[in-house]
Image (tube, rainbow over all chains, first blue to last red; front, side, top):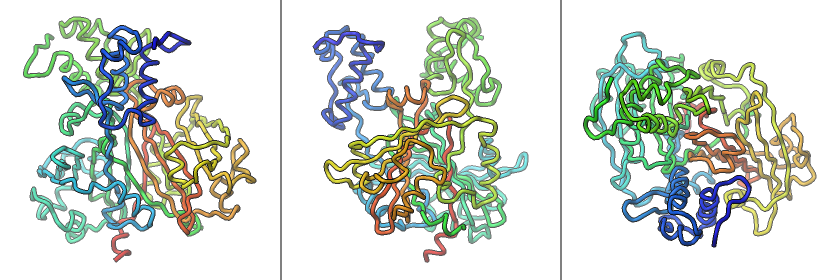
Length: 260
Length: 260
């Protein structure tokens, strides 16, 4: 099957398009081995460099993953259900969400986390959101969460040092009742939270910390917790690899009515 | 300034790291021209191909954009505030959100949209969410939204054909009071909505439709609207380029208390 140059697309792009289609319809299934460069060279009657370019394009799109020295595999997405509303609403409110979560659960996968605590001059985006004065310090609890031994996401929680310095938040161990409950006990209950979600390519640091493959963008979820008078008491920066998460929210369609 | 190979990082990675740092602290500001390959070659005393590799890495990370034939520029992110809760809650509930939105507004940018309507056998992910029977058709309103003449995002709304075929939803024109209001009038008010947000590299189709540069991942926001009895009446697929959007939600910190 010779592929000839038609229209404006180069030959490698046509081969990539062909393979993409096969992945999309499932003819090439998740975890299945891709045809090798050599096989593509024969099948499409092209130079080896052309076959390589087609495969490289699919790697950059995150559709296949290189696995040296044995070639390429179709990426298997098993996204974890990431539900920001969970912290204040442990169970979903809607039956549809409940079912959807059961379908996407991490059943049988073994969770683990590493925690360290530090006192730092926080990065600019945290400083602004916590409204810290110049030179004012923050406490940060940095967590890497693992599933089946693989790093899954990171979760860095920042607090103004002045309000948490004598609390359990400063100890590098899991807090079973949650840091929000500790804040409440310390006199800083959160009345509301703003979530911001940014989508971008990872930094080299994130690539290393989360063992990200090529073509893997991340969501950066920044969550700011506010006391009733608007004082920010907590900023959490979550880095969520795109191939391992789906972010979900429930919304109430009746809100318009209520606010009328 | 010669860069020598230290530790395990190759020289191009060290140059990239140096430039990344300058972008991060603002020494190289948004829209500013990057040093050319020739300049980097001289400054770091490396081969031109090494300088090129450093710049290519930053392109793939989405930090700089190529602008032939004049070199590379620091990417300028002017993210649009994308607020899913807006459809049922036109004004933010919290003062902090209000301020944040004012800071990120698209003030002065000229919006425009293109709409087409079609009757189709929808893609699998829409079919499942709308619970369509085999062969059951859907109506789709496909929109591309522009700001200052540039494509900004796409918004494809799917409805079971049976419930919208005699409504205004079938006309390829803006519906001032919104499609949700038309659904309500037709006897299908939405009681609740599930939002799913996936993060991935764009397909070639999306690259073309949204004029995406290299290193630009997208968020795919799928929103399913449900009637009170759980019947799905609407699925919207939004494609949001990461360099042009920040997705935001307000959450109520008191939910835990209420549900106790």
